[in-house]
Length: 458
View 1 (cartoon, rainbow, N blue to C red):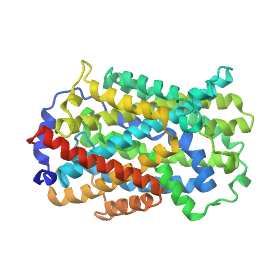
View 2 (view 1 turned 180 degrees about the horizontal axis):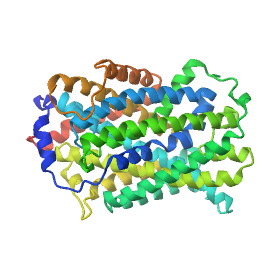
View 3 (view 1 turned 135 degrees about the vertical axis):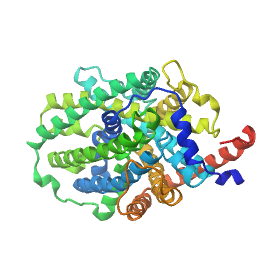
View 4 (view 1 turned 90 degrees about the vertical axis):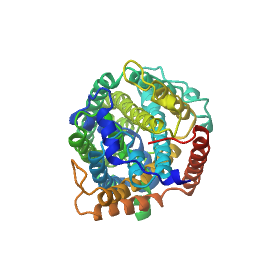
């Protein structure tokens, strides 16, 4: 039981990281694009319309702003702690050096669930855009092969195939997948800019009335739902061991990707809810849908193509992040050592196929909204842990070199923790139950596996 509270030695951890071999290929721009690749995807292309229709109405604009502010607090905390401890593993590693092994394990356990659920949710939404394109050529996918069983179909087959393809791409190594990711992000930014410019000419202010049809509670519920859309910057902190200069570049990537993405989200929300009544937006391909409504079918087709390409970048970023967390936990002996095995391209073969396989299966058979809510509650808990870790690390290691320092300590981390808790309580009770069961399974795994593996030495 004493192992439950054992902490990692920060100085020893940093020394081991400096000695660890492996290619470091990511600069500040690459990290920013990696974050934007993960952030700008399902949130702007899928959830925007769904949340407007179901939760917030035109006030989804406020939901995105609120979620962005909450994430900004968390991003500042991430920027400091990732620059002080530029080690892969994100909140898992931060919890290990500030709280102890059991909490760290549960953070890693939570992060793996969050990433897998996000991969699956994005893949689920991706199918709608793909079918939109194929329909324009008269070769739409049979409904039963793009619909989960709960909705009357057989399986979401395109989602499964897409996740497996992106897994294969990552097996080719960080350098190659980085190039593909950067191209996909630029394509995605281009089509979003096209949507904003073209859509602005069809905005009808009357569509913004009533602005808050579901009241303040709807705005908060919407913020909790779209929080999912901002989680990409967390993926950056998992890439510390692949960064050329992590203490300088990680803060730039985290803060830069979040700031740019938030501005883009707000503009898209303003235009989309101005083009059509929020009651019409309960569709997964809302950006293309509203353009069809105003007769701009050719632009809708371009948007759909861009969305199909751009959402691939989201899946790639999260598969990458999940495997980095899994590798770190595996090195620490909390999950089997086989997950650290690398191929000739320095890619973790077993970890990649495990994450890709599980994500593909879930994408094929589970509901998008359910996946997003579960990912949200896990991510919010992770952000609470990061805020707490920043405070604890300042006290335990005040002289540790930091490439970025959170201003107004401890106010910002406390605001981050409080705002995350506020959004958590606005998530459905069913989500809390399912997530609670997942954490219990994590505790059971930790206890049982620690008995099987025997004592380990950090």
